Amino acid sequence: MKTLYTGGTFDLFHFGHVEFLKKCKMISDKVIVALNTDQFVSEYKHPPIMSFSERKRSLLNCQYVDEVVPNICGANSKPSILYVKPQIIAIGDDWAHKDYFKQMQFTREWLDEKEIVLVYIPYCQDISTTELKKRLLNYL
Image 1 (tube, helix red, strand yellow):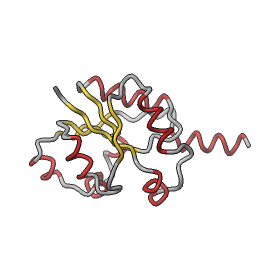
Image 2 (spheres, rainbow, N blue to C red):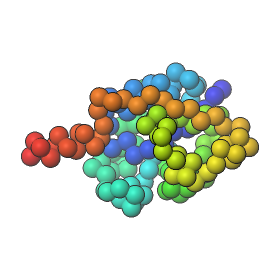
Image 3 (tube, one colour):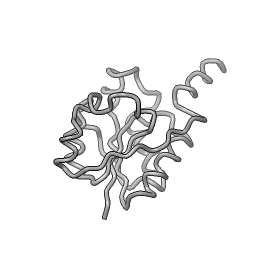
Image 4 (cartoon, helix red, strand yellow):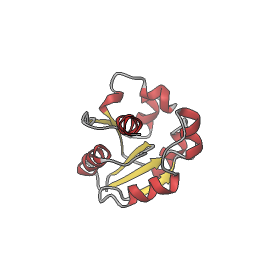
């Protein structure tokens, strides 16, 4: 059984999130989402619109998600990854030109040691949480 790990905030859950998670499920048997805590999101970006509990419930109601765990160490993803024990880590291909390894505080060598494959999933260009927030601001 192949377990896939992905992490994120998943604020204002939308069809772009669903498409991403659907593609994750297509390449694995089990999809586990490490959900960023409210505190981490507030420190890293800005406070989320939806609480951790609301975001978790949204994810658990998605047919492509098997389990949600808290991203227990914020920027250091290794403890959450070690807890999940995945064979695959999936990220959006919007990270293809960024330093994902530095962001998550691990190396390609660390992934190789753990026998974890990193895959890039095509990013949905049609919608984003940032875009939804802009629309809301324009609406008000």
